[in-house]
Picture 1 (cartoon, rainbow, N blue to C red):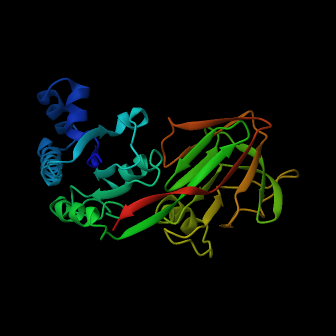
Picture 2: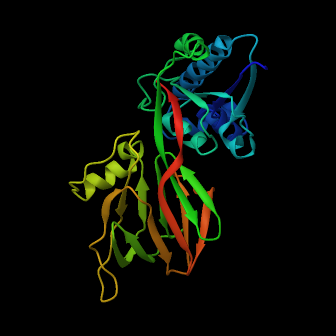
Length: 293
């Protein structure tokens, strides 16, 4: 039997991105200074992230196989069924990688404690060695975070950890027929989101507050999703009565606009294209994120 493979997922730091964009470190420093910022702040975060990655690398057992993948390469990377995925970065990086996984153990590592929210990256780099030891002994605790899935009638499938959004790729009004909770309604709106319990701490929470909703949002591991319609517009042909709810079964949208898109976790480049007349069902996925806690 082959040894496990540790896959370290990371994101290019803001400092590296800035130097790449401006060509030289001096030009990057001038750009920041002209806007009242200092390169030293970015350098500190860069160094702390590099230190965390080095600590994680040292913690991986010498007999394990290992691989590294940057966020922009995730769509082209093939995860194995027995991989242990070590995500070093912000909470959003865990969401970015979640859609490419199918039951692999995930350890979220925060390289900048006190800066990130730390909902999905709950561990510090120094704890990784002990966490991997517990994992190999079968002594780890897990939280199976519910994911959201959108399935179009032409076979397109999209999964997301936080939420799936459906709406216009521009700022135009989205028009569709919505079926959910035993009711149906034609609507014109700024689109809608279907969120998991994990997403209930993010975008869904913002909409929940803005709309003064009394809906109880689901827990992260609950087999349920919440949906919210954004800025529904009443008219002689469109209504505003079916604008939020908890879903045990998927909701269904039939597209009436020329084109709508569905994307997950804010990643617009990875999206479903939905033409007029198409139907998409959105609800709880059979796949969950297997997070080490």
